[in-house]
Length: 148
Image (tube, rainbow, N blue to C red):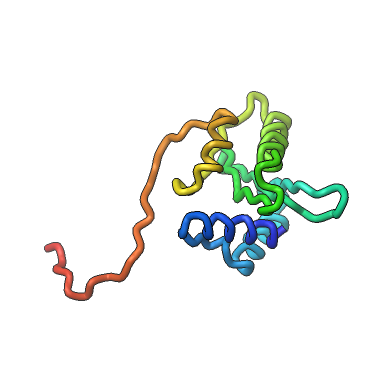
């Protein structure tokens, strides 16, 4: 599962030039371990290639407080992208929410703005972009003046 996440985020990084924490196998492994080891908090979804047994997709759902669910991270093995795996994982997740709560609670997720493929998937499933935020990287200028 962690390998699937790592490979999908490494492919995104190579396409965009942006590096995500999940490009590291160690970080992906820790994320998956946390989610799999807490079934009372996380519902984990995987897609598996029926002929090889390889896990080709991963997603998770977590209940946030009492009023919403959060989704992710969604990762699909690079060789299986553009074949509906991500969509099937999101539909399974939606079905689980409908089973858990009537009426279903709202769902939120965070997606990188430099990932138009994911944004396209989520908007085609009925999600609306609500907010955007900026990730600012760099070094602190030691000569900067302080606000008084």
